[in-house]
Length: 461
Image (tube, rainbow, N blue to C red; front, side):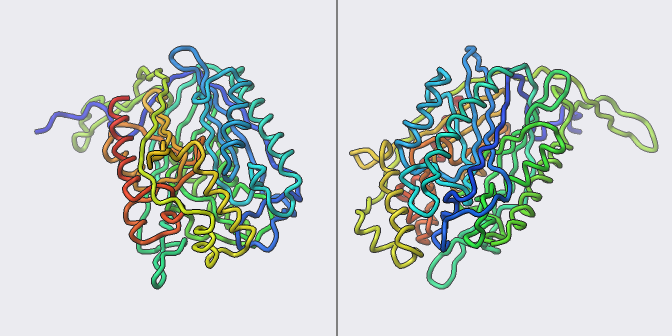
């Protein structure tokens, strides 16, 4: 007979840390350029579906220094100057911290303004510089407010499930297009963290999930956070606390129903994530507790009685950065990019944007020796570990890391800091010549090399 169970070992983790949170509206004025789809006939916005939000969490690490995680309802930042120098460099200088003490995770909504003056190429571009400036000032402000409100909190982490995301590599004839593939199943893992003060009041909710926010397409002229907005509304209404959305591995993941002109599709998709988050929260134990076997009770049969018992939470908060040296593929010239991409690109303006973005991605990333330096950030938050990087990894990256590290509560973050926001596709994607493999600067095998590097670093962190 096997030994009787003692403690529930289902995936859940605890953290006790000094934490503060602050949130602000960063919705731009109507009339700003906010429809970056190549298929769109105009980039002008004529209204707002739901507000764009910035959320900052301040954490005090084990050495007493402050670290910050910021979630932004922003698409991407294609320019090294606008990202590293004018944005994160400025924010960290104002806060008095090192550049790597700040993680900025972008939700990647496709219905917001560009966050780079060099990407403001279409109608409504004259409003972009002021939007960027106001957002930077807002990020600085909410980081300071989060720092000033830090208090001791318990974070209860748990894995949940969400069926919003689907695989978006779809074979059609002799090509693979970006669309729902009913033959393949993605990773449905959802990570939820519930932060509560020592009286049990909700302070913040962390939500880490990988799915492209492409519910709304070129047919809508509304500013929108896509599915994240409705999910956040549901969670914040139920918990009374800010929700920090952190985009997970999503390189080949998107909603089943997407590219819609009706923003109601984004709301329905958001309800899938929001209710999945609330279900995960409902299944959590009280803060700083675990589920232990208590005794055998004689009834109509022998019953196993379990009890909720207090446990000491892990209070370690630390960080390290690693530069993964990966090989890059042949770098196309501007003329080569124009020749290859013009047949599948809707307009000259969008083609020029794609080419410029590709060239900008190379700055501070591509090295003279045929490699790139792909930054990886590892943050330990008690029993949970955050792995963040600047790209868009195929979902298999996060799934395999969790399989290899079953005792670890792992948050995997795409679209975090810079440079580049480069795709990280697996070998099969290169064999299929997918859009992601065409756009990536990495040579085939980069995904697999990066997976091994992260796994090795996790095992020593």
